[in-house]
Image (cartoon, rainbow, N blue to C red):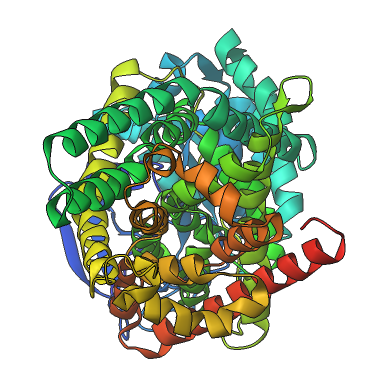
Length: 618
């Protein structure tokens, strides 16, 4: 063990700590692992003005002394003198980001309260100045009770002053570190007060950001703001998509008519019209709504608001036993559960991660939107229920909220039972607000459109073709009056399955659509379109009617509402099951997930149907 004084470099992630370590030690560094763990130990040597050597150790970045990962555990144990093979540091250098001072000072206050000789390196002051923020180090030093040295690590500015302070504090005998950190909320409030008092000059844009955040991050008004933005988003999904949807429907009808006129009646015409154009086209028609939804998501991300939404949701998730780290994976699941589940790798606690994986499919992914849109369009009147508030958009908003509430309730039950364990909160950096770059938004929409169309051309196309084959064979005898759908293989399977689904209001067509929907949820729409197209036969009056009109003729309202409720909790697609197996290293949890989602979907659909019938809706 070295007899040289030991100084630990500690701070939040992204504070420039490693850059400062490299600037102070240069090439005089040693790498290794801490005893008993795989966490890297990065140590180096620096010389004081009198030539005395000092050992400097660069600790993993963390937000508090309440660890949630092995890296953070090492940091906590080193500064408290508990790490095996590591002595208590003689001094601490706490690195803070000058442009994000109030967040970084919270951890600095926690470290200062330990009683060790401490220096605060006010790093990246050049970037703070560039963004219009000037701070007074003397005020910070007076409030914190420790030396504060402005630094720019990447340019090696402030290093001589920092070495002088290291020499000064090493002459102070270190106190014994406390075992318990201070109160989180009290330290955060104190950090905000000190950071505000240290501001010498601040540009109007930074003041505007702070003013917006006073509302956007407020526990009540911020939540209202978030719900308001989501409400506007779902209203726009319907209001803005009417014209492009009508155009796509017109193109599909024209193409269907041209194929019907060019080919004689037979299997080939049925395949192209009933299977490809009406089947796949019934899903493609919802591309405008999906792009509108992702336009809002991209805008919220690009402006910097999405991180604020994560901050607001952190408190809610903590109440159901989830860590705030679960928010980003769950947010990703609104696009697709597959990348959302893969994003749970950032969650260090295994029980937290497993819980997040199991509830990710309850987030309303974009594949559900075509299902919601066709049912809402068919059964919910396109009228306003208030100034500028459309009933269809309101119902869509409620379906998304139902998925979120369902996920939170399931998380609470799981954390109390099969994934029982403790969870902790987390801190996050708040980016400044900015105008999105139009080219970035357009690129994001283009990529989303390509992904959707590729899905339509592969999974949806293949599922629709297979379903068409199962609906087309065996052929019903000519002039027999027997329904081709009932006579087909698919119809017979659906009639058998409907024995179990009829009590919750489902009919043969729904039972049939649920089977291929396991490949991808939106295939349910193409399946229904294919069923009704084949059922119509050569009846041109029926063929010219939209899928929504056909559903309205064949389904009572309670059945339609039960179908919506089913898809709020619907068991996920095959891709989601596969990625869950891969991420959990076995079949136990994927099968558990499929089982509980089937049970929830059945119960939700049944309760919805029985309630709707009881109140006289059908």
